[in-house]
Length: 141
Image 1 (cartoon, rainbow, N blue to C red):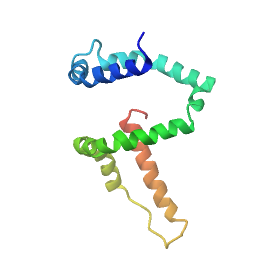
Image 2 (cartoon, rainbow, N blue to C red):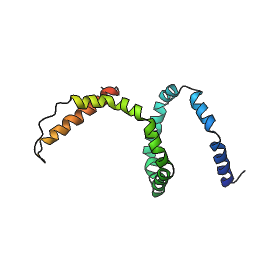
Image 3 (cartoon, helix red, strand yellow):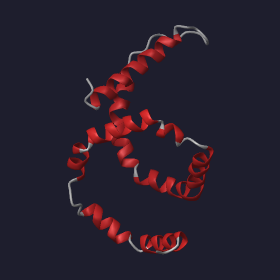
Image 4 (cartoon, rainbow, N blue to C red):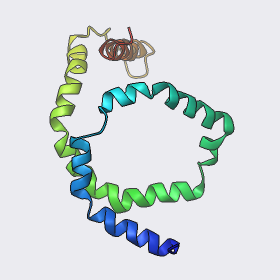
């Protein structure tokens, strides 16, 4: 059996050369992603509930996990961030458009002086309108 270091090096080398295989797997999956995901919802819920019951989720919140989270952002995520945003502009526009329409159609109460509690009514109107739009758009009522 190879050492852990040798196994990790082999994994890295093979994975680095597998970009095309990765792409083809997404283009021609064995099962339809949506159907497989839908079929697995109850198992996912049960797994999450069991992890919470067993305390596994909370035990994973460690200083080491936080260090790894930060290191992966610095080493990988930061370089990919702007590219991902650039590639997502159309989707952002499409997904935000209904919320923009809601905001533009609001009739807000009169603004009061700075610190006036009536200004909270303006916030409430916006929050409720956006929440209702989200529920409607996502099929939640």
